[in-house]
Amino acid sequence: MKILVIGGGGREHALVWKINQSPLVSKIYCLPGNAGIAQLAECISGEVTDIDYIANWAQEHKIDLTVIGPEIPLTLGLADELQRRGLAVFGPDKAAAQIEGSKIFCKKLLAKYNIPTADYRIFSKADDALSYIDGAKFPLVVKADGLAAGKGVIVCRDIGQAKAAVELIMRNKAFGSAGDQIIIEDCLIGEEASFLAFTDGKTVLPMISAQDHKAVYDNDQGPNTGGMGAYAQAVLVDKALKEKIINQVMVPAIEGLAKEGCPYKGVLYAGIMIVDGVPYVLEFNARFGDPETQAILPLLNSDIIPIMQAAADNRLDEVSLNWKQGSAGCVVMASGGYPGKYEKNQIIQGVAELSGQEDILLFHAGTVYKNGNWLTHGGRVLGVVGCDKNISSAIKKTYSGVERIKFDKMHYRTDIGKKSQS
Ligand code: AMP
Ligand code: GLY
Image (cartoon, rainbow, N blue to C red):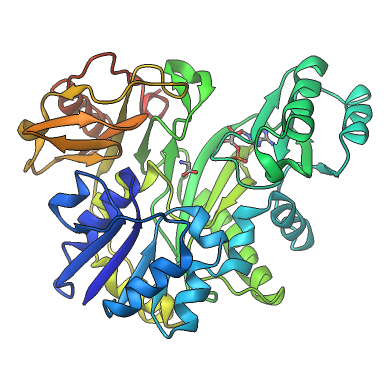
């Protein structure tokens, strides 16, 4: 089979790495890919937003399955366009991807199907939102309706912060039309987990749970990033909680989407806040998480291709998932300045030494290879993944890999997975 993976981050490197292990696969292409992915796949230049270009390319090259990594091509209808041309695709269509593309769509679905989530109000006018804030209780959370690269959610401790958030999103249009409408919702206090499942719109096949670390600094300090690290599985999601998440969140969401006329295929990712044992949905994503995927896929024994094909063909009930015993950690090594402005083209040391190890994997997010050197090329540069029999030894192994990577002004969190051990 010829596989095309869309995207070029650490998540896509992990996907390509896993797909490359399938005996069913003869060739992998990745658009645009990155320098690490180029070791396993042929990278194709192009924009992930260029739907017609990608669909034409896939058709011309007789791609057997396209796997869509990021949310933007999903919300722009890449899956619809590929399907229109009779090409197999792993990922939801435009209508179903609204679950990530519009937080208002998501909240209305949650409310209609009685899925636990924070109480909320929707606003289309800044003035209405500002007067609501005058009488509100704090903390509260202000969210842009549309996609904002993970930056459209602002947790506000007081009235000043909440008003500033409304000004930023609705008046200054910091996220463009994504901020035409906002949600203001109650702030939930609890423990977060990421719960991902494969689905064909009927069957829900859960993956192992994971925990993301969104804030840039240790102890969850500093601004949010795309994710500074993750580990799997999340210790707080025990068997009983997993059942609750499946039965109270994942299954009703998939059934609800089907009833609303937008059956969902692909990976459904629930961002969950656990409060007094109840799994509240913070958000849904219409795709694999980044960096959760880098910690989850190394623990999946099963060939991923038959799973993706079965999801695309509505026969996921024929498939089961087989997981390795043990745990995995992922630490993201970031450029100085990230998540703000950062420099590129710093020489990275240690990449060659970490390649080809069995229990330590290196997933590239923002690198280039030039004149015999690996260079930084993004905010998140590399993800080091360590696998071992339990979470503490997996984390230890991860940091033993981290110590071997060096580049000027690099930074990373030193407490990934710590909460699992306390
Ligand atoms: P989201 O993109 O909706 O997952 O939000 C990003 C982050 O904001 C989450 O991972 C949480 O840490 C935080 N967050 C979002 N909604 C809430 C909420 N209702 N209460 C507390 N924290 C929240
Ligand atoms: N790890 C958060 C996300 O993928 O959106």
